[in-house]
Image (cartoon, rainbow, N blue to C red; front, side, top):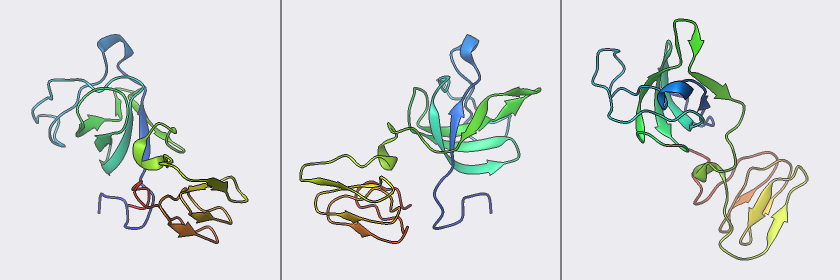
Length: 146
C-alpha cells in the first residue's frame, strides 16, 4: 500500500531543509505527535523511502548524519524539506558496486561489472560472478535489486 511495489527500485530523497537549525526533525512514528528523535537529520543527507503517506516520509538514512531510520515531513507551511532524487549519489553503499579485486568490464551503456560478472545492454552494476543482460538489473552483494 504505502511501500514501493516489489521488484521496483527504491525511491531516494535529499534533505534540503533545516540548514539554519542543524537539520530537520525526525520522529519515531508517522504521527506528528509521536516522540521526536534526539538527533536531527542533516541538511544534504540522502535517504531511501520506506513509505510515503501524504507529506510524511518513512526513511532509512544512506548518507549524512542523524537517525538511521525515522519519519520526517517532506514539506511544512510551504517550505520544502526533502526533494525526490532522480537517482542516488554514488556514495550510497547499496547502489555502488565496489570491486573487491579482479578485472572490471563495462557494458555498452557504461554499466560496470567486476569479479567475472558480465554486463550488457544497459545492465545495472553486478559483482561476484553475477550476470545481467538485455537491460535486466542484477546485483550480488550490493543490494540494488531489493
